[in-house]
Length: 321
Image (spheres, one colour):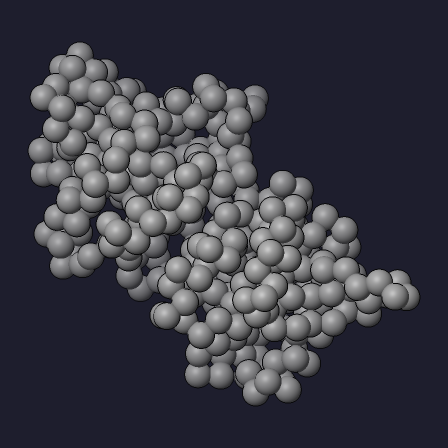
């Protein structure tokens, strides 16, 4: 029998230990990362326990979640975040967890579940039981986010376009360099200026917030920059390293960097760097969706494909209770 309980802060160590040993857990689900924006969301994360064995109660799954206006969301402060499964969570057990979840939601007055899958590339072993059981329960797929992902090893070599290689080689001849693990303070003014100029927006994280997160997750958050021959930062990217996936979280270039194709130089070098490292399977360029939420930005997808990227889909589903 599966039982569900709401997470509370006294269970932080238990939660984090489970995430680290889960088959589809990443550092985004650790409480220190989730709770940095606890003032913005009403957390309603859940823990699922297997009580089949007499006298034994085993944690088998987690759901990072928040509630808003009677709806339970896969945590809105995270890029993704469906059911986090333990290695011993079997197929039928996942189905039972969803059945228990719907009953829990009824009793809690939550009328709807909006569920973001963990993309398949972030699982150390296959973990798509949730997609099946939600389909069986009548959930509707309301959105499909297109991610562009480069396979860093395998039978096919990385196929960066000749155009990207030419841009990269030209800047290298001019004395440009890629700095791995550069100070965030070198990149943030470039990012802030670009976002404000192009979109009238600010980064989700302030410099102070992202620096605090980097101090908490030294092995997981990495800033890389492209500097010109004078040592001036012209482009940068913040990478999230999780399990065996490298993900671009923030990416931007100055006006001069755009003119010189600094991002092409930076990303071409970084894809090659992590492929040579041998510890990573995928380089995730993130999603390429237009503001309407349904259409892809064809030009952006094409740009990412020139680095050898191909499509992975991340579904968002809705289940009425």
